[in-house]
Image 1 (cartoon, rainbow, N blue to C red):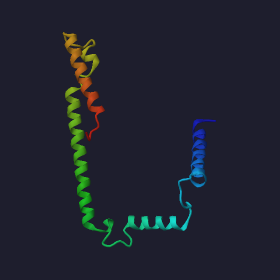
Image 2 (image 1 turned 180 degrees about the horizontal axis):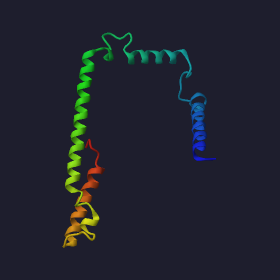
Image 3 (image 1 turned 180 degrees about the vertical axis):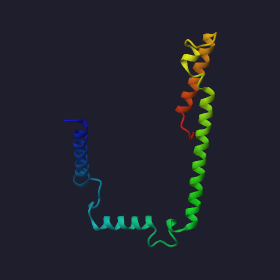
Image 4 (image 1 turned 90 degrees about the vertical axis):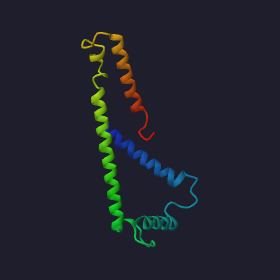
Length: 136
């Protein structure tokens, strides 16, 4: 049996097993999964999500919301292009100092201990910048 067949069978077994658990074994449910109350809740949720029977105009039907969202999407795109540009400039400024063959290999300048320290500092800063989440 090849890997894709085994994966398909395992996925099918997990799907069936999860439904057996939800429908038969889960003691946390206070009502039946397939009941009129559940159907009414789903209907209310979908209508509220789409803005049906809600006071006022739903967000997807308001042209000013589309313009506002388009403006925010443009700002997001501009920020990501700026971030990529800054990252590219940083990489271009430091890639030579992070290359082991240039800093400590046969292409290294005279003082190997100083080149090793620079290599360690540059690679350490790269690891730190990649390890810290961008939102922090």
